[in-house]
Image 1 (cartoon, one colour):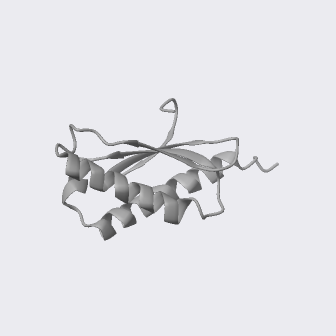
Image 2: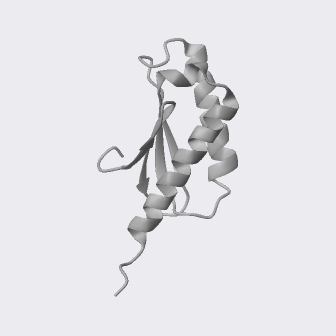
Length: 107
């Protein structure tokens, strides 16, 4: 999954994605103890990312991608709305990159 991914990131998350030939997007989480020391913080971020993926990514029509979300330390202190907005920006950026990569060249 980590070989040659599409990348998008900000101060809260680093999101990697790769096109998926079979339909349907998938989510992977890599929430490191190095970034979020307390289990309660890691669990909060995991719940939030899963909820975002379930409500905003799966219902969309768009390129099927495998996503891996990695949290950064700043995510601990951010409110949920800010984190949702951050994830929304990253996913849109990755979907645009995937769509532009998959378009055949115009001749």
